[in-house]
Length: 116
Image (cartoon, rainbow, N blue to C red; front, top):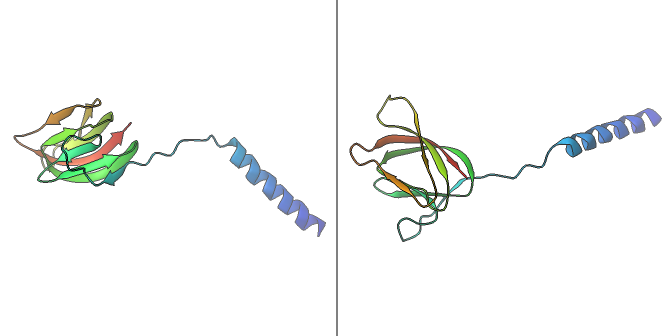
């Protein structure tokens, strides 16, 4: 019985040590949200034939096709994109309350976003 108690106590101490040693990190969860009725809101917006909006800081892999405008909203944004099918991935960055237009041709695909 004593061996069982010592083993359980040792396991509990090890678990507590791991929990105390781990640094507290903030949760970052970029998520898709319903776009408001007005254009160029506080959200990150990608415009193609529709509008796709995101809120909150963090990083996310996405697949958004045919983009002609990127609006940062109240965010600083980096986004990975392919101009054409099979072309290399490029990165764009936009400061708060700014936009970039890609009219002719449209961006083939946005592949990742980072919001902070």
